[in-house]
Image (cartoon, rainbow, N blue to C red; front, side, top):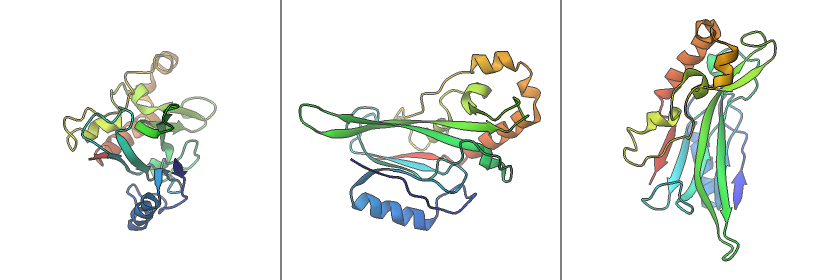
Length: 196
């Protein structure tokens, strides 16, 4: 299985460029099954292509996928605000030892926020956004309108008790409010598309 990790795209653009889309098409034609991009410093959209009409978490149902940009993980950038947001993708590759067949299972993704020094802790702190704000199913929930009935969403659920216990007043934090506002805006972009 071929995985490509291109350094591509325009910095700070929340959507992939036409050049990124052209390159992803070419990479798929050449046999790449997973594309995970970087460079824009912000999370961009993703596309999960299914081979059938079944649930994408079943082995062999995912043909290929592209995450155009995962954004930053740890960042001191502050402008635009989206540079403090990153994305973590968990891609499952399965090999059948009897047949030798290698297949993909549906990925899971989480959106992360990097609090810079002094914004939450004395050091940089990266946290899953959904865990802090108590939102279930992550950003992929925004995708359910476009893909109604496929039940495909990220597996993140609930608040992160350790963060909430350690920072009971976090919701009064200016940086927390900026994170929530950024997250809500990204949510409107329907960033992960499931394509049949």
